[in-house]
Image (cartoon, rainbow, N blue to C red; front, side, top):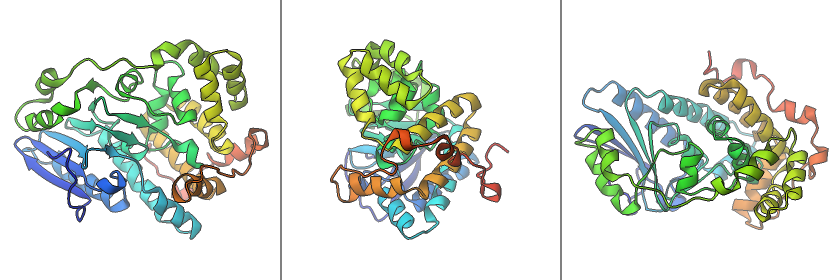
Length: 353
């Protein structure tokens, strides 16, 4: 399985079987393997077929190019669709979230190679799997608040299950974590040095997953979050974003002050909706109802000015100076937040039945 060489991008998803394994390679390395709607459909169809194929005993997903598994959805296309008043992004999310649910419920072991950048939609196609492998190059994040969006693809479900308030910290700041912290937060299962990934993926064609993991897994380099649990758990347990910021600024820890400064650059609306979504995900418990909730939130965010503005500032113009609307947390009302969770009627995702 070619993990470190850029490939011909004419086929954005490469599928092959060898021995007992089915291999999926996301193949848009120049775009950090960002997901498009056809890519989501291809992966979903492959999983559906391989679940019924007795010759395929394990599924492996990785990214081409050596820079990352997947940097997320194609947010340039989403912004263009929002500007045009289209509906393609909503259709994309509908199929993407269904794929996330399929991965989580896959009847065969699903091994995700989370090497390099794994963000947004990349988390969705990896962290719901059975065996999630990180390396010394891994950078795992749900950075949506920085573009006026809200963590999706089951991200609020995953982060809500992290120890203490670590998930809330990552959801609001959008900060990336390395291997050890991904393991601590429950976003990954095993550390494997990147130079051994080719051997590992090849071994899955002949060995079962547990034997392969025993051969190649190692101890991860030391992380950072465990050292900050006290102020993270205290600060992010607050009921409002405003109180979270106050606690972060009052606790006297330089890292807490840095987190507060990061949060203050994010979309005020996205922050308040994200906190509500995280608390809602924790209460809902199961993945499918959380994906239903995230679909409602994403549909509302699609019509929000902050998504268009956030992508402009971070990706299109790259001036890093978004003009959020509203611009202040105090201007985002409870009614504003509630609008993101309003039922969609016949347009509901409906995964929870």
